[in-house]
Structures are given as C-alpha cells and as structure tokens.
Image (cartoon, rainbow, N blue to C red; front, side):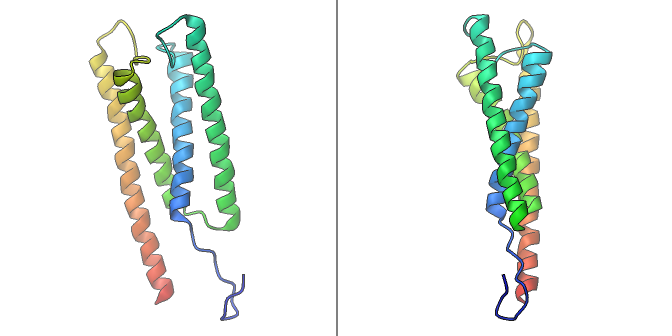
Length: 164
C-alpha cells in the first residue's frame, strides 16, 4: 500500500495476534511432548487413567488429534501473519512460552490434582514428580511473561521512533 507521502507503508506488526498464535502453538507442542514422551515412550500414564486400558488409549488418541489440529491451525495463522508482514516475532515467541507453560501448569494442577484424570507416574512418591512438572510450567510461564514485556517495550520504542 502506498501512503500519502508516496512511499510504501510497512504493515504494522500485530503483537496481540502474534502472541495468541504463538500460544496456540505452545499449547500444542507441550501437549505433543506430554503425549509422545510420557504417554507413549515412557508409558507412565495416559490422558484418562480411571477406566480400562482401551479407554486410556482412546483418550491419548483424542489428545493427540486435538494437539495436531491446534498445531496445524497455529502454523496456518502464523504463516498468514508472516505473509502479510505483520508477524511480531518477539510476541510470537512469548506466546509459545506462555502456551507451553500454561498447558504444563493446567495439566499438573487441574488434570492431575483437581480432576485426577491421571498422575505423572504411579507406584512412586509423587511429590518430586509433581514439583518438577509444575516448576517447569512456572518457569516457562515466567519466561513467556518476561519475553512478552520485552517485546512490548521494544515495539513501543519502534513506534515512537517511527512517529518522531
């Protein structure tokens, strides 16, 4: 698009949308890590362990399908932002960390403790596993918040320089 000054106007980065798309990808990636590593490779638990093995395996399949849909949708939206030149890279990375951490903390607190759908592991002292699981989620969330704040400060500085 050509502006009033006759020069092509660069599109404005869409920080909030980039953050949301990054969060979608982050949730999907962390769900995939949980599903592949802990459900399939280690076999420590299934998404729903309060029924027969067939039901547990089906619940893993549903989780895997949901994470793949979210991952594909996230990358389609990310590609659209990039194609339009409106991707705010820092905000997108912040979203990835926030989404990953939110999934981890939600899984650790809601799925494990409130709903008791499954535990990290069975037949062992759960405390170290729960502490590690939730601590990783909190660290990811904190890193996401820090990166989001840094991204907002740097985009605000760019806008002020462009206006001034």
